[in-house]
Image (cartoon, rainbow, N blue to C red):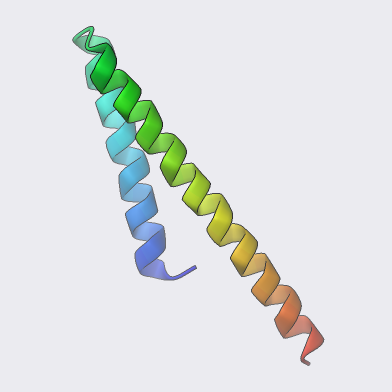
Length: 64
């Protein structure tokens, strides 16, 4: 995973946490749900990138 992707995904996750917290504090269910959705999307992207990184590591090990 590129550094830029890691930063974007962490930023999306942090933004989601903020939205969720603000939604909770203001009883705004839509904002809270949007925050949860953003966090889930970021975590899904991070998991996908982790799989790519692991596959690259395995490929690199076999090519040695």
